[in-house]
Length: 200
Image (cartoon, rainbow, N blue to C red; front, side, top):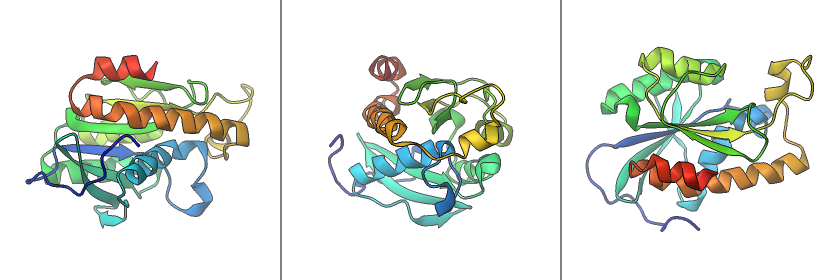
């Protein structure tokens, strides 16, 4: 348990968006591309909340972590159009990019590894590419969840990211999700260096 279970008590609009990326629907639930959804769902369960309120083509939940009011966001537009929901919600609440934390899968990291970044390019990830395009900014922090590289160079990338985790990989993924849950409060507090140290 990393958070005290409590209902939001901070008044006013959300200060942060915490966005988990993935594809909606049961067919995609435990695929590598859905590591962001899985991580955000785990954090929500720690907070005893459900991400189930539909807003601007996303499932959302309102919560408070360490005195910061946050809106959890799971875009329902499918991965390649994730930025549409993020743009609309951030505009509605007037939340700048630097206060939008995005959690997503990264094939360049071994399964179970975690990496924190303040900002940066899309790195070939279509969900991040969409968010950068629709926000017109790459200045948002990221929590990258390692899902492992393709088994061989000829393996189709789409087939790989849409493949389901095996038993061993799922155990490694759980470790990364636990770490992501631990570091999120530091990012909300603006202490990304500490989050990076914790993630390593």
